[in-house]
Image (cartoon, rainbow, N blue to C red):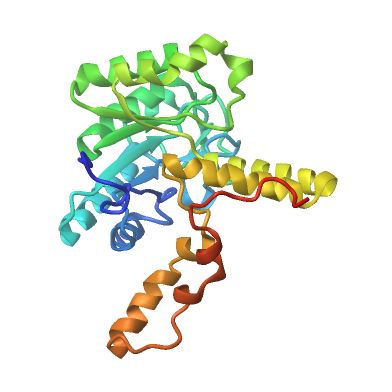
Length: 305
């Protein structure tokens, strides 16, 4: 639960992206085991053809039959059972935007196949995408997944509500996931008031796992861009401002100010001391210049006169 505990005594749960399983059910089984061994609390699988897999916001996506994805989800659940862990399995559907399907063998997929169009040069069927095939697939996946995720093209509360209501009509207790994606232009699609309430409203609909894919990618790139731009104009003043911002954020739990400590140098010191019975003369942190300078004392903010 995490109540009363600090980040030093518990690990934040990690949800891993298994893409489309990297093959068939056996691949889905093995990668689930690998993710569990690596410490993942949950893993999500999407219903695309693994060999043609695309980002959910790109074209060229090819769906696999509903039953084929159920086999992958079953394989993932079996792997968690074999490993003896209550890991979460998240089923994602890309049927809102995908236009192709490998096979029409599954009767549940046939209402959405566009038989008026010829099959592609690769042999794929054309399908009618949109919310309805997403709902049909989500209802089918629900018995095999802890959470259901419908990948969408834009942030749309009305669409999210219709999806949630349709799924919960068949599976009232089904938990849902929502990707608040950086591929959406948020201000272009929604006003400020709707953006502010967006996740609260999703939560009320049953979307209990909400996330921003690639948020770190954008923050890291923009942060480094801003530092480089400032460094070009103001040299070390720009970096010093970054450092002061780090110090100021420590009260809120920020820990990366001391980068040597952050990457585990102290941990390996402890290992070395355990091996040598406390007699190691090569530990690093004891004479760390970083450690000495980053003690919480008043910085010299004014130039010496």
